[in-house]
Length: 324
Image (tube, rainbow, N blue to C red; front, side, top):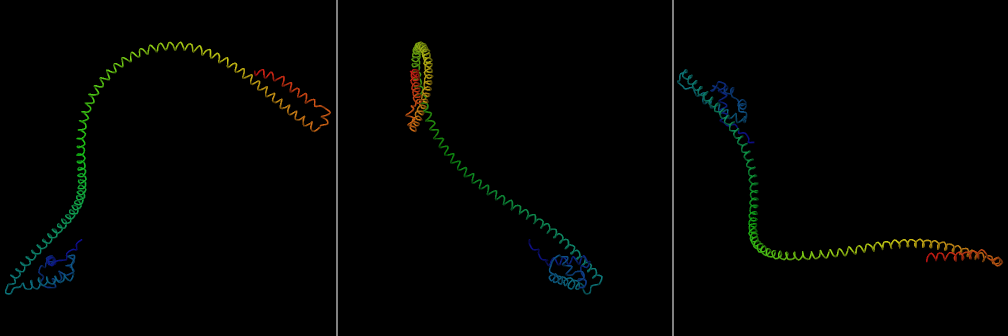
């Protein structure tokens, strides 16, 4: 914030004259009267600022001007007292009018200054707002410029792409024209080939119908022959099934006979093993008692042996007969 301006001599003079006019003494007759109405303290309080030494210096100059030079020298020699009094009253009225004008001018100046300060403040606020808006507008302008540049680049890329697409479209149109000509030629060729194939198909169809009729007749003949063979084969299958049943029956009988023979063979094997064990036991006993064995023959062993032999001779033919 700017430093307030110092009190000017004109402001001091105007204030002093206003204080004298308010006191009813626009032209004091003596220094004491002037000092009683105007002092440095009162003047500083009225102005609201100012250096006391500066105010005192200006106040002395104004006092010299008003009291000593102005009022003391106002009495003119050889002038009647009544005229001097009237002249003095006229001069005081002029001074009072001047002071009133000065006060009015000061009030007008204060009002103008306040209005100017308000206008300046408003102008500063408006300037700040305009600066802010200008900054925003510059930022927006920069953004718009960048966007415009980007759009220009995109436009150039699109134009280049458009040129490429137009070139490709021209090439494709030429290829399409060539393809149309080729397709027309191919359609014409295909129509001729189709007519030839249709004629050939008609001939093949008639031949196929003849061959189908011939094959149908052959199929009927072959079917009749196969039906006859199927009847004969059915009879043969019946005979073979009867033979199979008979063979299965015989096989079951032979299997039962084989199982019986195996059982008898197992029993005979068991008996032989028992006889061997008995013979081994008899041999052991004979070795331990030779004298007793010499005196008494081993009858049970012989009987057992004969019985085993008889059993073998009696059972073996039956098993062998069953096996055969």
